[in-house]
Every structure is written in C-alpha cells, then in structure tokens.
Length: 250
Image (cartoon, rainbow, N blue to C red; front, top):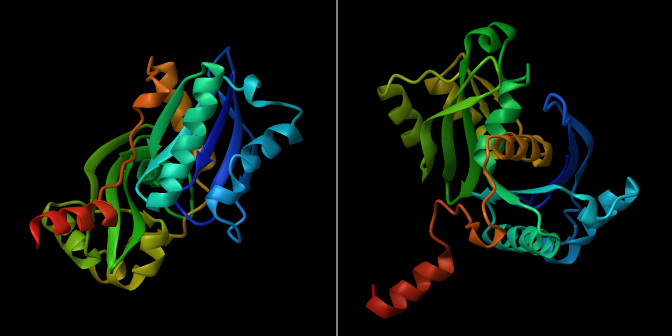
C-alpha cells in the first residue's frame, strides 16, 4: 500500500511517500522532502506532491491512502493542504485520514534519542508536543509513549501561555521526559525552569510521521469520507472572531 502524506501547518511543510507491507504492515519511508518556504502553499501545491510521485515513476492514481496534517498551525496553510488532499482523494476514490500535527510531533519524539532515552522507550515515557501559536502562546498536547510505538493522549490539544501550561502539568503530576516542536525550542528556558531534566528538540519534517500514523489508523479500520475532514484549529480563526465582534459590537 502506498501512502502519500502532506504537512502544511508550517511555512516549510513537507511531503512524504511511504510503502506499507501487505504481509506484516511494516512501514517503509520511500522519500520525504521539505517544502520550498520561499513560496506559499498555494503556489507550491499540488506540484510538490506530484513532483515527489513523479520522481518515483508514480502518479496520484497509484496512491492507496492519503494523509494530511489536520492542525493546529497556519490557518491558510491548513485550508490549502486539506483542500489539496481532499481533491486527490475524491478524484481517485481513495481514503484520506487527517492526523494532528501535535500527535505527529509526539510520534517523532518517541522514536528519537534526541528527545527520549533508551530506558524511556522500554518503560514508556511522557512526551510533550509544542507548536508556536504566536501571541506568546503555544499549541500543546501531552502523550504517553508505549514501547510498541503507540501513543496515549494524556492532555488534549490546547492553546495557552507556555508558563501556564507548564505549571498546570506540574500540578497535575505530569513529568515530561521530552519536549519537541517550534514552541519547545522557542520557550526552552521556561521549560528548563519547571522540568530541568526534560530534553528539548526542534521540530523535524512531519510528513513521514503523519503517513505512518494514518497507515496505522487505516489498518484498524478507519476510512472516513474525505469531504468530512475538518481542520483542528484549536484557536478560533481571526476572521471568525472579527465577524463575531462586528455582530456584537464587543
């Protein structure tokens, strides 16, 4: 099974092609590429995806499953990325699975020695995914990583002040072994003040992790209709808030 994955939550974004074994479900990364941040997603898509396929002598019709980051992240990037993959899925009659960028970050972290230690992997560890939400906030989520690679959500997607998030987690008894993402590197000093033993790592390209998680969900029987995929904004879009303010005068 071939999986084509797209992350458009950041300026760079990424695309990936994966192959899933029909025998044992093993996932092989065929190719992963960062996007061209000098151009907008509207300018780059869908060509970055079709170029990736063409490099491996494939077309969109050869893809069995599409995966896309559902958010949180850039509102415009999310809309363009989701619309692009919905178009591919609807045109080919193939399934499309949306995956949280926060979950993909945690997936990357749980497999990386830069964020977790070998002993952590054996016993399972708590990993924090942080994405810079601007306005001095972070999009955050907390996951318990299992030795088999599965992730158990411990604190769902939120947007809040970094220090408030850290304080809330400490009060709840959480002890993250690692933090990963643009928000983690930006607020590394604050993290160290609350969780001094936690590792902090930059965000890697996410498309491969998105594709791997989507393949696992598809194997469990998930096959939602592409038209039903909704962005995971976490924070309400500015345009929506502006419309509400104009209606209420507040």
